[in-house]
Amino acid sequence: DRNVAKFRIEKGKMDKASVGMEDLLRGVLGQIISILKGDFGNSMEAYNMEVFEGENYLLRLLPKSERMAESIQTLELYFDKKTLNMSQIIIREPQNDFMKIIFSNQRINETLNNELFNLENPAYQTRAYY
Image 1 (spheres, rainbow, N blue to C red):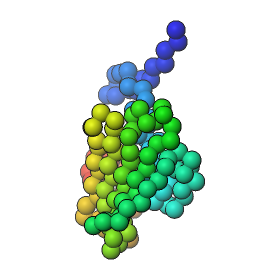
Image 2: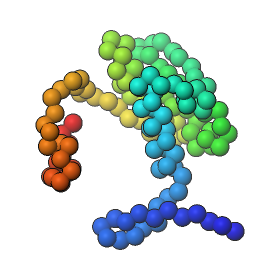
Image 3: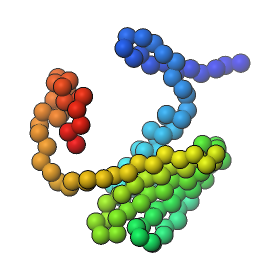
């Protein structure tokens, strides 16, 4: 019997990380970013898509893969009707759990301090500058 384990080092200590859900969410968020960029290629292969119009626009993604559907029932991407900016994401799980990400106080094309991109300055890594 071959088992797979994933480890991460935190605060100088090696801890066993959960395999699967974190990587799955990272992949899903990558697909959402692709959709925001207008690249539906991989998403069209992985999901059935439904579009609804109400108070906001809703793009509902339903996994085609049975394996993915065991972890994610639907991805719901909500877009503001006026700005077309994404306003929230709801990731629904089959056990009626869900994760909701709300985008609030959005600022578009705002000037950012170049120090935000200075990887040698850890002070910026501990503060929310965005």
